[in-house]
Amino acid sequence: MPSSRGVIDYLYGLEKHGIKPGLDRVRTLLETLGSPQDSFRSIHVAGTNGKGSVCAMTASVLREAGLKTGLYTSPHLSKFNERISVSGKTITGKELVDAAVEVKAASEKAGLTELTFFEFTTAMAFLYFRRKKVDFAVIETGMGGRLDATNLVLPMVSVITNIDFDHTAWLGSTIKEIASEKAGIIKPGVPVVTGVEQKEALRVIQAKAKEEASPIYLMGKDFHAGADDRGHLAYSGISGPLTGVNISLHGPHQMKNAAISLAAIELLRAREVNIPEKAIRSGLRSASWPGRFEILSKRPLIVLDGAHNPSGALTLKAALGSLKKKRLILVVGIMSDKEIDGILKELVPSSDILIATAPAGERAADPGVIMEAASKYASLTMSAPTVKEACKKALSLAQKSDCVCVAGSLFTVGEARDFLLKSLARSKSSTCK
Image (cartoon, rainbow, N blue to C red; front, side, top):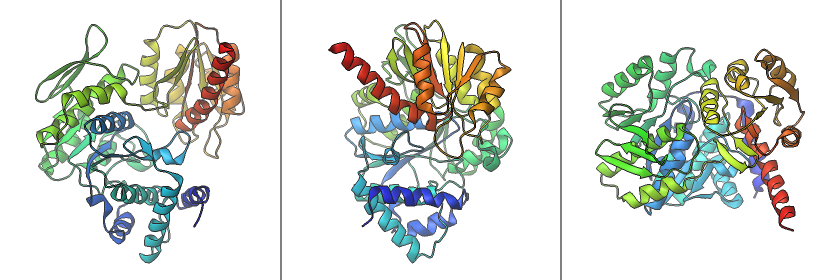
């Protein structure tokens, strides 16, 4: 029996097969496993940004309602196991090994010699959810939707958070093309919730919903998100209002994400899924989604946010603008295949100091490339070879009234989070002595 470390090494070894959009391989694999995706009810979530937050909030509400809930998301921050969880508990090392062994045996039986990393791990998640006998699973697409390995679930609700430019090499270079790929998760007769705002993208999604005879519910038309005088969510829903809702996730953009989650929950309730209002309130109040506008400290402010594309960077800029701070010290590490200039164009002008860095891995952009791209936006720029060193430098420069923000990639944020949590714990311990 392999170790969990050996299994994870094997999984990452599958990355040599690259990205291969398509459902034939994963369909054959799941059929060989006895179609585990048919053993539980599900919600399927696609979108460019915000889909992970919507998944986290929705899963939290379902758990609070007493439903055994699986959650499958990607990527992870610190450990692979974070991608697959049931009722808030991540898959254990032994469970990971057991699932991988069974999926590998099925792939060999089916003669599938070049499964991709995401195809294999998706099958593991579905198999694990069946083993754990979950009532519901909240499933986040990896990329796109139409040809995504997760697109073999038949959900009770499909969700499309938003549409913007990302993964253009695979999803297309226009909003219309990207919207078409995301709309591919829409299934016959299954209701759709969307926060998409661009008219061109909406037309594509509405056309697909009409083709599949799927009822569609639009943010700004069928449901609305606002804030009350205490800063809590005031939700105007499909069937009625829900006011004074306390959301644990930080940032103004999470109001919209919470509203999308609530609309999906409303549609489940309409189909006689027992989700009391008490569970909705407590679920949104206790939802956790690390690394997404996560505030680790207040003096100085330390904020973590993946913001790995221009749209995410724009959202982060707006959220940072809502915080009280003297200076903004930005730590940025970006993958080389991302829109580096587009991300920096949004974030750098409002920062006072930029520290360019690189997370571990071959895909990371060289800090020198980031510095050069950032220099045109007039921030004081410097670099550090590792995320740990960049964070140390940022903390040494920060005064109590400043804000340190780590962004550009979830890989960067994951490394930063591990270091900063330990650093803050040591600081707190020494203060208490």
